[in-house]
Image (cartoon, rainbow, N blue to C red):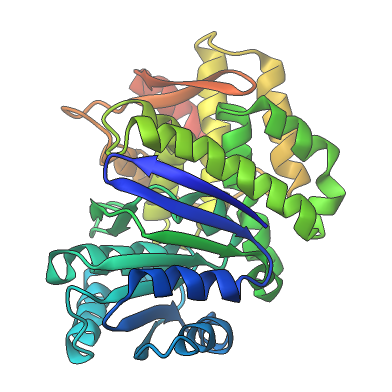
Length: 359
């Protein structure tokens, strides 16, 4: 087990990474002394949430209720947010209460936004159950649901009071969901941490087989990298945009496909697009493009994605929430382990690269 403290302008909180962390979860919730506990989970994770999380919390003698949303990205909606808020009202969760988000990125974002707005803000404990959520979405306080045309368009910054990443939950994941997470891991490696890139190349077999000791190292490196960025720029006014490497085209692909393309595959697509844009603009070497491709392929994230009309993807890119005055600021790689924010890219080049990447 490893533990680190994430500092932000809103305060500090612990992130615990390890296996079978029921005791740490119970201690984290007990320290908050909540007047009530509301667990938000989804249909896939509910058995684990009941068996592990609810059981651990109830041993502290706390009143606990569970609300379950349908699994999948479509639950990141205003309709499901309304259902969660109605549940919190029925259970009389007051300002002294606590929301525990148990699931992947969809549950974390949805429950986090509900915690941010209910009673103008109640405490939140994140219990990510997917590798993707552990390395990325559970950290840093970004919560959201999707708009009618844009991903994560309706949201708030709301930092959790604790993050408990129990690697035991990864054993419950389908192989495809586990594979998807490595898109975000590769993101950190290419954009921020060359040492992580070397580790991914060297320890592929152990990571693909979900070796817990190796996963603990990888999750810690990703969380540490994100924590440093969040400490400097909690509300994404500048440097935090580095974390969006691969997400401009990736989020556009998700939206344009009606979320048929998973987040991991979409981010992998987005990184391939970003690297090719950078190479076309003489910002990076061809070797960087090839190395990134090799790494994505090695972790089961091939270049081919389900067919989506390039025009729909281009239209979605124009709605990127980081755009200013209609101009998209791209995060582009310069060398392995270092990307840069704020690049303007000619629309014709983006159209050409996206169309080719979609095959």
